[in-house]
Amino acid sequence: MSASAKPIANTRSATGIPTARLITWWVIASEIVIFGGLLASYIMHRLGHPEWADAASHTNTLAGAFNTFVLLTSSLCAVLAHKAADAHDGPKAAKLLRLTSLGGLIFLTVKGFEWTADIHEGFVISSGGFWSFYYTLAGLHGLHVLAGMIIMLIVAADAAKNQELQRVECIGLYWHFVDIVWIFLFPLLYIAR
Amino acid sequence: MTTEAHVHHPNYVKIWAILVALLIVSVLGSMSHVRVVLLIAAFGVALVKAYLVAKNFMHVNVEKRWVPYLLIMCLLFIAILFAGVAPDVMKQSGLNWTKNPANQSVPAGAGAATKRE
Image 1 (tube, helix red, strand yellow):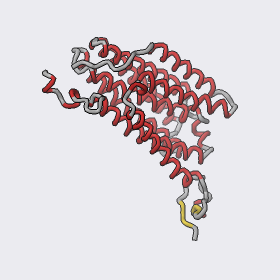
Image 2: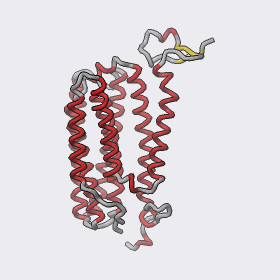
Image 3: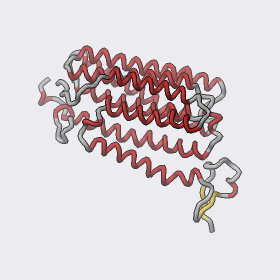
Image 4: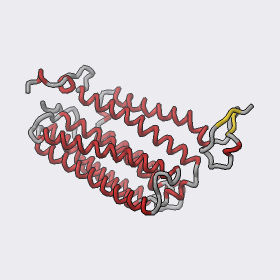
């Protein structure tokens, strides 16, 4: 495919930032408002409800810590994929993106076991204010992990053929943001008791 | 089309190791019964970890200047939201308002605010 036939997002750089990366930053900016609003609401309610500490003590800190480790490691794979893409090594970037996606799968699997245990103990989304926020925040984050995994596998398929390597950095940026959101969710939902 | 390298790639494994070490610190800190230690271990360490990821993995520091400005502006919106809404959620009364007495018995933050006559 010639450069002129490519979508404008791949060829234009009017702001000094390639348009695809520019769009990714705007997506991240909007995500900051979405997650920030939810986190701010949770924090103000948590400060107004000291008794929520009892509910928070039922969350599994070890599972949360393991998932943090998994996401940090997957972020490492994503940034190494970006480095490989910069070196025009598409197959290596694809392999690393698939590893990143595997990290997302492990994260969601652990989350699934964790939620199953919580629900069996009787802690469901309607069990109280803390649990409403817990399932909403972690659920919305989990959806972002799932979306990132799917997009990453699509990007990896092209990268393996040394095509559209600029997308590797964009999906990496998104993944690091998802990682940062979890970095704040972990202490808020698992550590603060 | 291939990517244009616009960043210097640092030693990412070293940064990952620092992040994992900070994670261990936050987990160990969570076992403390001293509130200050707990808060620093939870939120202080989280801020450092987020900074390291944004700087080294997202390369915000080498991006065009308005990108960090854009992100900071979004965070500012959140601060405004918090400042505007938190008093209603966290307080039972203010200068010209008090929460409906019928709701006084429910936990703080759950009642509706009504204007004082």
